[in-house]
Image (cartoon, rainbow, N blue to C red; front, side, top):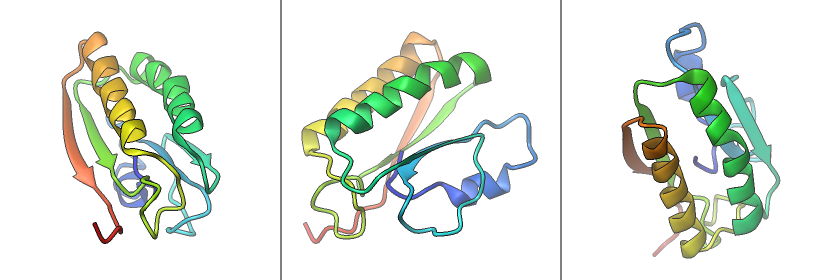
Length: 125
């Protein structure tokens, strides 16, 4: 869940049915030529906390149910922050915290272990 599509991950695992890739990202941001994930959710520039979290809440439970993962690798992108100069989204710190809590709790509720990394970030502070 980064402002940029996970194009490298999507390309690497494109033909591997044992890996399910999902990306919720800004559709009008780099990379301009996107690789195809199993599920891509393109959101418009300026997306804020409520719409972003609604999109994640709409797809994540279904993805966990359909893909039945052994583990979730979660990229908690901070370039979704409003102050990120390259991000084009408008999430607050509270919005990012709510997103992270939701993802982790959804995985734990589904009894799926989750490993998290922090990615992105083009803000000066």
